Length: 210
Length: 185
Image (tube, rainbow over all chains, first blue to last red; front, side, top):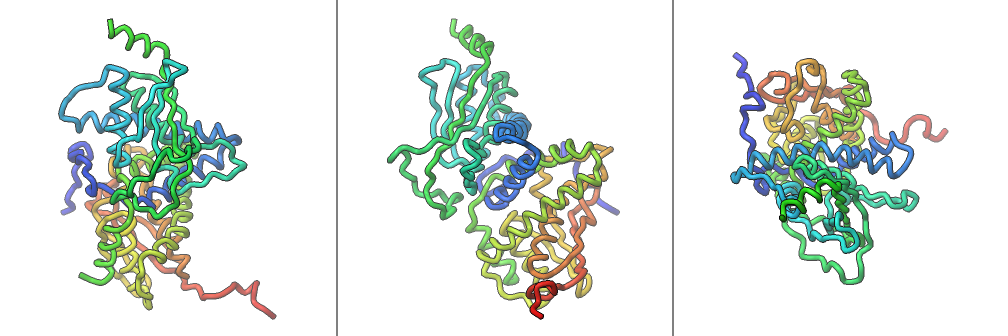
C-alpha cells in the first residue's frame, strides 16, 4: 500500500542551522537571475522592474516573519520601531543570508528614514548592471523582503534599494567566511536599503515613549 | 560508495551555500508570478516553468563541467550516474537514487526537494507541475551534452506519492560539430 506522505502542516518546521537546509549559492543565483529576467521581459522601465522585484520580495518577507515567529521560543513580538529594525537587520538577515547586516543607521536629515547597509548582498553577488540600465539595483528583491517583514509586524514602510559606490578604504574585505568563498573580485558597491516609515508608525512609536 | 557519489559529496562541502528556505520562497515568488501572468492556465504555467529551467540548464552545465572534474562519460548510464549523484548533490545538496530502465532511459528518485519546502497544492491546482523546473534544467543540461531528452515527473509528493521520481527518456543523440547548414560544400 502506498504510504501517505505527512500533511505539510504536520511536518515540523525544521529550525535552520548552518549546513542543515542549504543549497549551493549558484543554484540560488541561477534561480534569481531567471526571476529578474522574467520581470525584465515584462516591464518598460528600470523603476518598474525594481517595483516588480520588490513586490516579489514582499510576499517572501511576510512568510519569513511568520516562520521566524513560530521558531522563536520567546513568543514575543517587537512593538518598538528600533527593535523591529534590529530584528530585521540581525535575525532575519542571519536566517536568510547567514550573517547579520553590516550596519543599521538613522538618517540625519529625515527622522522617518533609516538605512540598512550590506557590503555583500547575496542577490547582486553575480550580477553586473549594464551601464544603460542606469541606477538599477537588483537588490530590490531584498528591499521587498524587508518591507514585507516590517509591514507584517505592523510597521508599514516604503523600502528602496540603492547601490552606492564604496569610498576608499571604507570596507576592508574580511576574510571570506566558510560559506561565501566565491573567488570574486572585491565589491565596489554596497547596498543601502532606505527604510521610510509611514507617519502613523512614527507617531505611534513616539506615543509609547510618554 | 561510488566515485560519482564521493565526488558529489566533496563538491557539496566545497561550494558556497545559500539558505534553502530563501531558495524555496524565491521559487515560490516566481511560480506565483507566472501563474498570475498566465491567467491560471496551468498548462501554460508548466510550459513556462520548464522553459525557465531549460535556460538555467544550458548555463549550469558549464559550471558543473568546470568545477566537477568528472571523468568522461562513455555511456548514458554513466552520464545518468554523474547527473544524479554528483550534479544534484553539488547544486542542491540532496541525495538522489539513479535507476536505469533501459539503455535510453533512467529515473532519478529523491525524497528532499528544496524547491517545494513549504508547498502544498490547492485542490484546483493539481495539474500544476510545481517542480517542473528540474525537468527543464535536466533537458537543457543534457542537450549541451548532445542528448535530446524527454523529461517528466512521474511521482511527486505534492500529488500524493511518497517520493519524487523524474523520468528521463533519450530521444536522440546528436552528433558533434556544426549542423548541415554550416558544412562546407
